[in-house]
Length: 252
Image: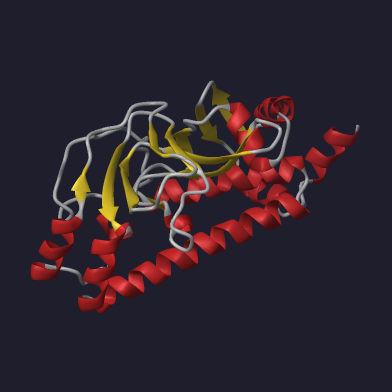
């Protein structure tokens, strides 16, 4: 039976042991005293509201942050004065990992909607990792995932056309939502079309035009930020450069 639950916000403070996204961040076997030690270094922050900063470029790195609910965007400021979106983050994902090396945040993180974020002071996490080997391995895994996602983005921007980029973007969110127990085909995109364009290296007009085209072609139904994916097979085909019908419409 398909899971048709749509992402909702739940900002209640709960222990890591029963947090619905803990399994995406913590080692599976962590429990008992080890879990209590981990919880002792986690700060359960109050909910942040749309537009609030988690951290800003230039801030000293002190903590990484686990998203419990809502969504966050990260961006850098370009020389021209506009922002370059570098990522969108969902419940169960960590932000701030890129600042570990130099001790300074080079990007800013801002809430796209009401969100709950748990702060994990990094010096405490390092100390704890020395006594819980599984936690250290999990950190390596999460760092590796961050690098993998950045590599995928570079590949997407460097080798895909506009339609393929948007198709890949939608499929990526579909996969990420389903891992969190939500619908793979029915969800809300909390970011603006302008943010999507910045992330994908496309003009906002191109993003809006492509959403309209995908809607008209029966690939999806879109109403403001609510998206329903109607033809996953064709979206995957399009992402891989094999949707001839869509190509013909683009060049016709």
